[in-house]
Image (cartoon, rainbow, N blue to C red; front, side, top):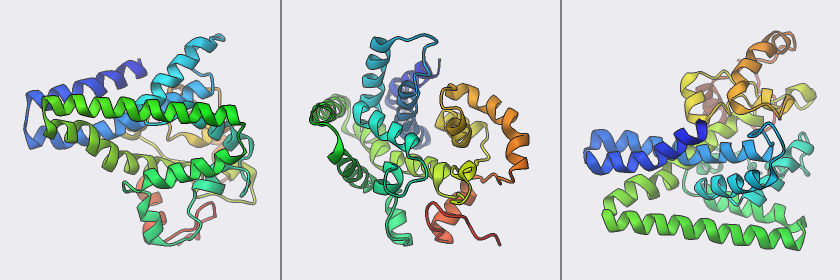
Length: 280
C-alpha cells in the first residue's frame, strides 16, 4: 500500500499540475514530489532488510530493489552494500561508510549547508565512489550499469515531460530532484546518527520525536533508532515499536529531538556530527 501510494503520487502529481496550471497547485505539488522521489530510497531500504515479504522471495526482492532504486535515483547494489556495511560497522569512524565517507570532515556551517543544495549529488556520489574502492570488481561493474540505467530512465522521463511541456518537466521532475530531494535527504539524515553519545552504544542513533506529517513524508523512517535495534521490522510497524520501546528509552535517558531542533543544532549552533550536544 505504501509503494502503491508513492507510485500514485509520482505519476498523479504531474497530471494534476498539467490539468491545473496554477502556482497554488504547482508549488506544493513540486515540494511534495521531491519527498516522493526520496521516499523510494526508503522503499529500497525495506528491500535491503528483506522487510517486504514474509517469506524468502529473492527474485521479487531483486526486481523491487531495481525499481525503487531507479525511481529514487540510486544504484540498488551500491545502496545495499553501503547500508549493510553501515549497520555492521555502526560507531566506527573509519569502517561505517556513512560516517567515514559522507559526513563532513570540516565542521563549518557553509559546508554543512551544501548538503541541502543540489551539490548534495556530487558530495554523495564522491562518497559512494570512495567507499566502492574496496568492493569486488563484479560489484563495481554492476553498480556502474545500474547508474547508467538510472540516468537513462530519468533522462527519458524528463524528455517525455518536455514533449508535453518544458515548464511541467522542470516543475514535476527536474526541480523536485535538484532542490527538494537534497533537503528531504539531509533533514532525514539529521535524525539518524548526528546527535549521539559516542560513549554509549545504545545512544549511537539519534532518538527522533516524529509526528504524522513526518511519518507521511519519510515513510516512517524517522524512527531510525528503533530500526537499528530491530532492523527486520517493516517501516509501517516502527511507530508501534517506538511506543513499546518508550519506557526503555526513557529509562536510558535518551532525549528525543524534533527535526526543527536538529536543523538548528546542525546549522545555527554548528554542532559537530556524531557527537553529544552541549545542553543549554
